[in-house]
Length: 290
Image 1: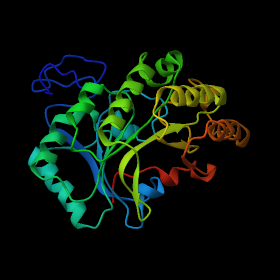
Image 2 (image 1 turned 45 degrees about the horizontal axis):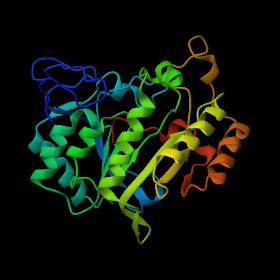
Image 3 (image 1 turned 180 degrees about the vertical axis):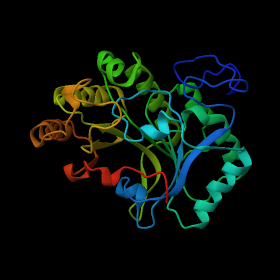
Image 4 (image 1 turned 90 degrees about the vertical axis):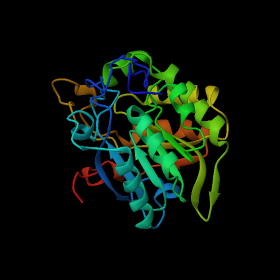
């Protein structure tokens, strides 16, 4: 696993990131946008004291509705050495965070691995990703990650290409998530807090409740039965979304759309979390300054 001839994500762009930037916008050092305690993750992740989130800049996808588009597209952030990243992790632990939450970490996996090998924190480490990742890269993190928190955005390649710029999303996501489950096993929850396990997130998009239903069915058929699922209704039109470009998703989801997906979630017997539609607010979008 290296930044030379980079193949960390399924794009495998092959760029030598010691000399130039990859498709993700990353170089040969991790770039951090924000590191602070965050209180709006799933209850078993945030807890009372907040999740110690580290937001990495850049992204391997191009989701038109990205709520963090300044971070993912504009690469807002500061490059840090592996030693500095290690100190950021340890400072969040000292600050009383429930865990270390690595947000969008895939394209900086080598730096993260080095930092965690130098000083693995005593609190759980969370890999909070978009799901578009190689199982081979995930395998390199074995023993260093306690909780995996990936998205499963789409089962449709047509939708993933249109809205996230990748035509092979589902096939890579299912392989990566199965590798995550192999590593950490079934969920372990103590005193209301997750210590180990996998939670798969699915964001419901407007105008596409039946695409979400198909995605949930695909997940049920292709992922282990004890995987927790977090159904999210927080979508708001941000990023590149506009009435001119993407009129079908230029609004919040409706109660009827969400209930359609929620019924299927329950029919399939998933254990996990269902977000309230009140979460569809810019209030819950992370700010770049403390």
